[in-house]
Length: 434
Image (cartoon, rainbow, N blue to C red; front, side, top):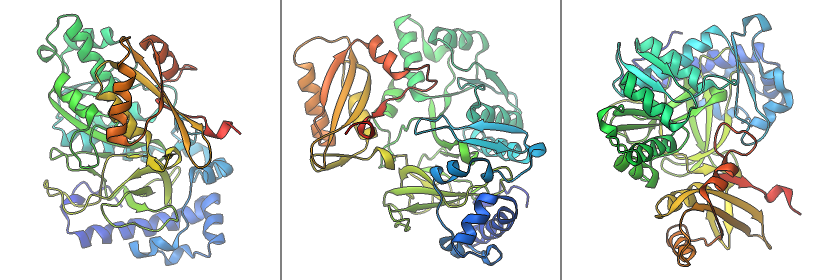
């Protein structure tokens, strides 16, 4: 079945029918081509030929990343000669997962991003400054390059470069749009201000942001989002992407949740036992990819905690929308009876004047509680600063961690320790202690 860019305009019942047909084809093909899923279906007593509608989805077993890694290449559904690209997850939560993509999968990858770029107003002839790497098996840079090509826009492939280099290129090439992680935009704005430059005179006013949430659970801007609006301005569009699924969820101009693309993915939110939860209730995001050849994912537990946004988006597009990622199931913290995710702590720290950067560490505590250590990079040395940090975190997140103040350069070294390409803000040390 070809891609359906018109699917958002269909009635909900018709979207479900199309998804049912795509699900049936996905299960039928996967059962015959993937040794991993063939064994999973057999062990679960599932006859692939009987899966025909979305109602049948609940009969299929859920699958974790660890399940797939144990079988490795058995999860690939095409022979070696059909693999056009191999990409990998970052490995931030374990060993990287290697994903095979066919030429059709690359077309699907590009189509997914073409839609996102179109929603933020990209058109033929536009120039987009891409501050995302295209190397080291990283899929995001590839996806944006393909999507912009389908739009007819130009990609300025800058990748990971010093802040000054980004600003100089923007002044020279005057891009119409930007793709970056939110923290880079903050760094660009601060450097431009420090150098006495008017960012609005040359920087693009439209930005597609990846990797960090800029909305809170109520879908309004969180602390990071507000900082960006003040420092950068323009139109900021949030996204959520998943390497192993070859897809991303996108905000539309209404910014009322992240839209799924119903002909490319089926979305579920489940509790710890794998049972669906009501709309608006937080749970783990589970996805089933559609129209994927190389490595299909059937009821795949992403490990990311979010919720289904109830109702219909004011933009009129149908299909499931999810809220921002609230945290990861593996990163759930229990501190003296309070359950909290690192992202809630990050949001508070970003709001405290004097915090330049930080690393959050989870250690094994006494009894059933975790011990939190926050290493804060700051130029402040007044004795009241730690008290300010503690009061802010307790007021908004109901936790009081141990604080260790250091220079921003020392904390920066921790964030990118080992030559990481993405900063590691949360470090879970609980499993390595007795």
